[in-house]
Figure: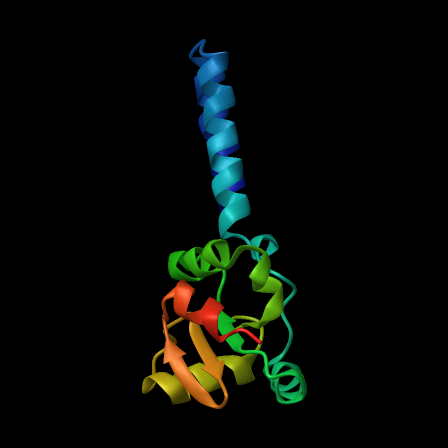
Length: 134
């Protein structure tokens, strides 16, 4: 939301300065960036408990992530359509997910952290994760 509002402010300044074309470009750039860094760019998040229950049933990995994380976005983009084949847990919305990441990383909330067959992998290569998908 902050990026979208910032884009509108920059666009308003460009319009006031007599540059409507630049205003359109800046607006579009800020809106695209806001969309890419928002939770909307990711498949629907579930709670840690739900992700673990589903993962036990279907064998899919769990990806712990947070909005605004460029490494999470990189993973999401590189997975492409396969992103729907993992369970996503937003650690800013789920305290149990954040605790799981802290337990796996020695106390910090480094994301993306992927839990695969009970083993955590911090910031794995997207190609590696794609090969692990059932």
